[in-house]
Image (cartoon, rainbow, N blue to C red):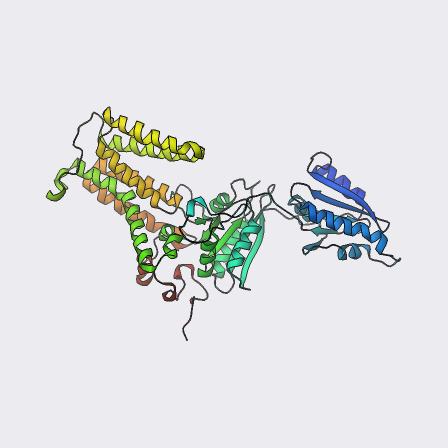
Length: 494
């Protein structure tokens, strides 16, 4: 967090002294993007400081012309307050006064235009910032067949505006903080004042204010690691979204969201395991279709976790197989143990996923064909893999890809490898003990003091039914109790 001095230094009334400070400490005349324009307005020296890469040139020119016209339009007297007169002639909706030198520097480096007048120990901040960035578009990781296409971008002012457009409530709050001694990154905490749990808001605010770091180069991910102190736990303790409609939905439920400048995703807190399995597509279809999609997704997640360990158990001990499915198991023998084949195939799929991320889009299709046709088939032909291993590893990988949360999918892959190792060492007892340890581990996790497996553990029947079945909007009258909302009712019946 940017520290404030116990004795803040005031802005000097001498423009020469301020200019010398800018040259010595801020890099005026050394860094090319920091500029100053000097005028004489009504026989008073006026300096305008700006960063040419972050300022809207049109607004700056318009206000500069307005100030110059004052020389012909105004006739000051000995009692004229030149500072207030100049302030009143600025044609912009966001104008504020500054009296502290440190605040002036922070605002200048964030892109704000600073206007100072000779003889006055204060400055005018003209917020005419324009940050480089892209226009809102649909996120690649959260696509829907029908629905909005205005996803978040790297400008958190745009992101808050996209949220405000969906929640036009006077109780919606965006509390702005600044994090990073050098980066001074803007962070906003979003919540509904009459709905969100005040204790949760205070905890998040205190944790963010306590951050002491040079800069947030990884933006929201760095905030997350300070906030939840995850350590080496692979399971995500917060949820990310790049969709404005999902963010607005969670705010209305009573969640607290964290917006970080330069990041196109926002952090949703608190979150549970099952909330990572929800997708916007379920709510763009009828309740029955949404439920069907949800069950298919849950089946894919279960396959990504348990299919390979269970199949490998049947390979090790075919006696567990019922007669109807005795055909399950490798029909060919190789010199490489089955468990090693599974590990190698899983590693290959992980490498393909990483390669797909780093491969330019025009080449991604060619890479997929090479991997599937050449590497996969030739590996079988030379006896490195048996076909059944490729089949079940591929089905488990498809289940991983159906998981809406990328972070949860990777964590489930690690859990699957743990279960495979347990089965390889202890067979059936290993699978039973491994699954038990896995469930106990998830049950022990708490995200900002919220149970990670809620509503399964602790069991909440109505909420658990909403996990399994997508209810119609008129039927969801209560907000989820996991966020401890101050107002439990989404809608009231007369």
